[in-house]
Image (tube, rainbow, N blue to C red):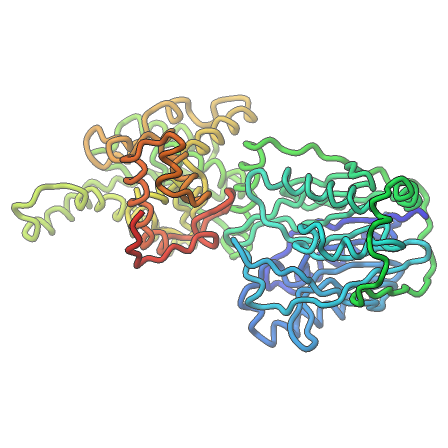
Length: 574
């Protein structure tokens, strides 16, 4: 039997039940126009993912269920698998299987992730029953995200002897660098091990600190890739599947004959009542998008996450301090790509310590991008602060206190512009600085969204070079990428005066923050013990700063924020 399936890779918004409903209705209509038999939507497509403590509001839960019920008439002539939430004896993360306007069954997610950014045990009951669905000669199984990451999960039972020829997994799988390749290898293995077609539909879009990359996939029964959707944009992936191929390959696979044939008691078989088949006029030609490079996917993730955060939270324009340094330059380029240059305001805020080349580089970048640019000198304000504080600081040397006055003045001005014009302030600090607390509380940490919060300094340079490469010109001025990093808060200051060189600092931070390596393990890797001890101390004692910093986009395996829960009050000594 031939079955035409579609994967509706959509960008939902948490809590926007009417808006998410409209997106689903549009995709159902598109499925009809493309003569699809079965269309699948991402995990929690109705509510957006993750809805977090909205799930503790009964009115939200029942409103979300009502949206699902309201969608039923839109599924006439189709089988649709729609991700949502469901209330029975408790609350479930569910996939509602609908055929020709009628609910056939509701599958409840069985393996609830509760690590990293996930917290599903806080909200959901574990699903206890499994099912396969028969549509004429086709048999398919449905699972949700984490259910498929385990070899012995629900999909294995669904594809058991006489079972599903097609495994459908609806997902909301957050992005980090390299995850797409890991996910694709896992899915190919599941398809090959079960000798089944496998269709995986993933959410796309930004939600607070998370970004979802899409890249929905369809595999054949040998684990071969048949179709791949776009990354970081909405897509509609269609393919014709010849389900007789499953039997062909299962006949050659003796492993399946060793599987137990006794029913588990959890697997139900649900026969979908017949309805008029969809007539096919032309064959579907599945697309196979080429995966992005590491630099490209990192850049696209930041653009999507920034744009969605701004738009979904009702902002129209953004403002940032444009210093002429590499971090603020990259932030400005990302914002311009995400929102359009006419919605980005770069403000230079020089003091007596700001070099002439920094102001020149900031202005040149603004011209290259076509963003709004203004200069607001703050040295007079800085001098006033010094004079006001002088009676209290008399006899004490100038040091970090005086340096930090400058970013705090800048933060105050940027927030004033935000208040007056409704612009969202973008902070420009990177993960390396955030990790060791190389920032000023209520200064350069003041703002609404931290675009580079999870981008290590070395990756900042990599992304700048990538953006210049695709522009085919020096969009970011060469001097920005070549000069030593400096906060310019005192004469001739360089970051390396206070920190290890970033080429040394970033690998230590990766080992400690992302891999949870001990001091001893890092020393065995060849890192200098004194340097490692210093970095660990800086990371641990600056947790209080990170707790007060704005959210930012997760692109590494472990980001400060949802992934990282170090206690502020902490006397553990490494």
